[in-house]
Image 1 (tube, rainbow, N blue to C red):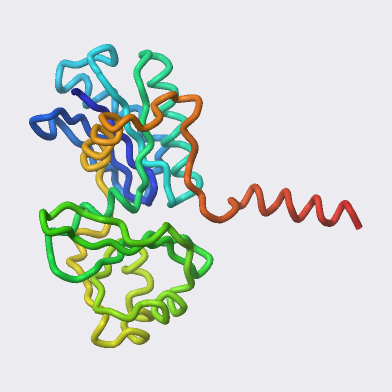
Image 2 (cartoon, rainbow, N blue to C red):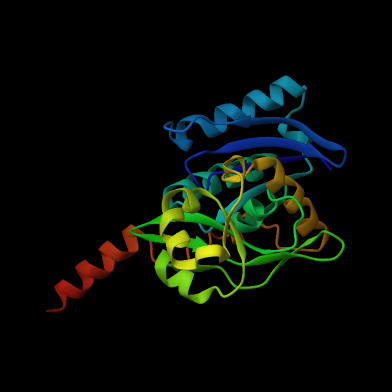
Length: 235
């Protein structure tokens, strides 16, 4: 199953082509460039480099959040456009699940974190099963880092761009319960999104592009602005 995957939940976006045997090609986009400028050209370049076309694809996968509202909208818009143009199924993959796969097997619970801005992080707790597969222990949530530290009672491995931003706060709040993973693991990758997407598709996860929605958790800036205007207009 040849899968094209797009990952845009953080500042470091990526695109990948993957099949059952492994990664055919992957492009990591430089920080500082907007996903709207890089995503589609990168997808077209990877298809060209591998000698594939959209019609050769069996599946398109995209991270749907939580993460950057703008990044998620861009990624999902491009993925839906490609899926509709090629008549291919589309699967949405949670970004924290993608990020969680970066960590090699280890005994502690772990907490991938994505910087949510406004002094918050998106996070969830995970643990490895005995067969080295990953199990999510909690729902996705939005947390103030100091409040998250208050909730965690066991030694926990942290990584993600949220840990880059808020590691000091977490370390101070958790003391020896705070374990920092290698910083090379801090960004999700499209190749992982592809593999998770293939598994979800095989399990029967929704694949109609019209029905795939982002996971925002909290209201977007546009929603907050609309709510504020609506409230003021009602006075």
